[in-house]
Structures are given as C-alpha cells and as structure tokens.
Length: 144
Picture 1 (tube, rainbow, N blue to C red):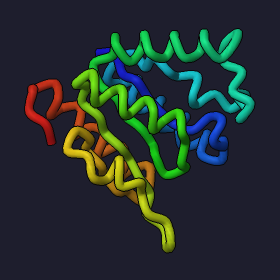
Picture 2 (cartoon, rainbow, N blue to C red; picture 1 turned 30 degrees about the vertical axis):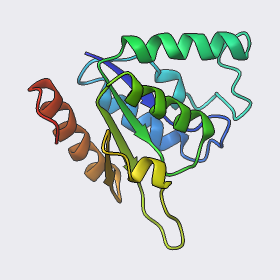
Picture 3 (cartoon, rainbow, N blue to C red; picture 1 turned 90 degrees about the horizontal axis):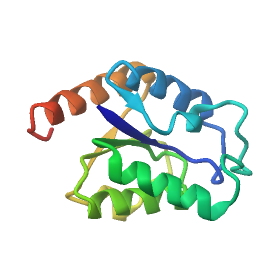
Picture 4 (cartoon, rainbow, N blue to C red; picture 1 turned 90 degrees about the vertical axis):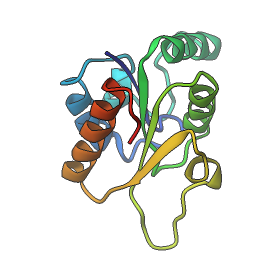
C-alpha cells in the first residue's frame, strides 16, 4: 500500500513531531511516499526539492500513485488544502485528522466534503485508532 501523508510545511512546523509519529505508524501499513513531512530538519522554508515546480510535480505524481491519503489538518496550510482537493478529484480515499480547540474551526471545504472522512482526535493514541480503522475499511473496500 502506498500512503500519501499531508501536513503543513510552509504553513508552519509546530506539529512536525506529531507528523513524525503519525508517519511512523502509517509505515506499519505500507510505504509513506511523503515521509519527509515528518523530518524534524525540514523548516517552513519548504526546501524539500530543487525548486517549487519540481516539488509540485513530484507531489502530484505521488498523489496520482498513492492508494490513500491521510492528512493532519489542525495547522492550516494552503498546500494541504490543494492536495486534498486534488485527492478528491482523483477519487482517492482521504482521511482528515483534526484536533479541535476553543475558537478554532476546521475549514468548511474540508469539514463539509462528502469525499473526505474528517475525524476529530485529542491524542496520538486516538489518531492511531482512527487511522487503523480508516485503512482497514479501505483495504476491504468499504469506507468508514
């Protein structure tokens, strides 16, 4: 199984340790094409490729090639929103993980989409269980 993980890079890196933990867990189900998103050395400068067109084209190829997408969307990111829009257009199964907080609401374009499974969670243990259920459901061909 090829998994595309989406999380903020240029939108901010305050959740990078969480991304790393999620990616480590996802690797127990298959190959994570975007494991660099959890790299503690990658800054919000987003220098994970030679230039912006190369990063875009590489990530689009991974989106087309992946079996499913898991995104952590608590930290808003234009790039993650773009990726999720494309994932839906490509008819890929999409899981959006979101940590609710007082005064913070998830974008209606994500929360309101029938093509995206959105799951609130409070800790990594809960996120792992949601991910496991999502992957198992999609392996069997039945969405959550």
